[in-house]
Length: 320
Image (cartoon, rainbow, N blue to C red; front, top):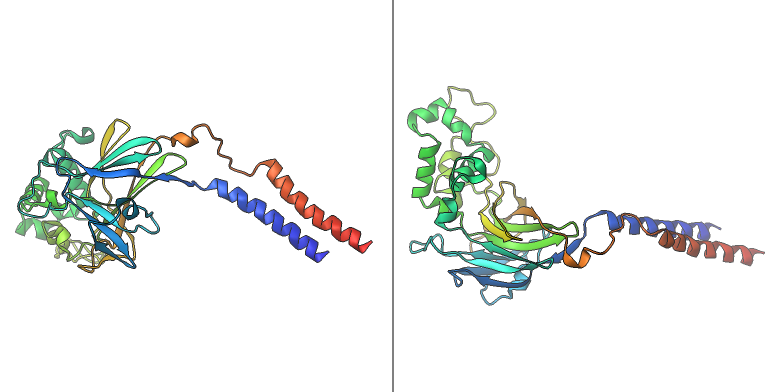
């Protein structure tokens, strides 16, 4: 009898487990038919997964490079890879193009015109100004403007800081997104992984301006009249990617990174942070007419319990 009960419990747990399969959003698909394009189609780097490292290899398979997810980001493709070089043409872009869920999608590096997009989200500011202020606020630099010791030695406003940032090619530095993966779940949500630095302190990523401000970040025990001390928290800013999907174009970026467990084999610190950004896409074409159950069908449950019943019946016959 004990064996029969165990089998009944096993069958029931299988049914419950199957029910769980339907409650979590499953991965419906990834980017397919991917290719590199744009007005600077040759300006890209491919980084393949190499154990716990990423390694540069422009002969790598693009589809393999983009096969990761949030848990295991894998390799990445860097668009507008020459953005940090002196001869970079800020009027041209590099794109990653493909289809996901039956829809075309284009990811692009940013041009100077993109950063100059006016009245972004009705703010009355350019996209560059809007993003810059968000970056300051997200990393707790915004209070600098009201810190007496900083204001005395650095009599700047946000506009002055932004001008300094641009003069040090800060915008170019954030125009070359490293895309790790592009996945879509059954609800239509599209997740994009952007490889970057988990903590940009002391890294050239922010030496254009934010690294200067880092030394003035206020610590919990700083007073109004003292020079603020840096907080022991990471500086996190992703690069920006321009996405065009289903007739709509938007700029995506994040100030919140997860550790990847990876580093670029050449420099030992790049790609150790993953910034996931998302857009709501349409439900994939092949799922539009299918029913997504949240619990197993009654017939499935009854069938599994019926199997357990057979075991119980056989046991009773044997005892008789």
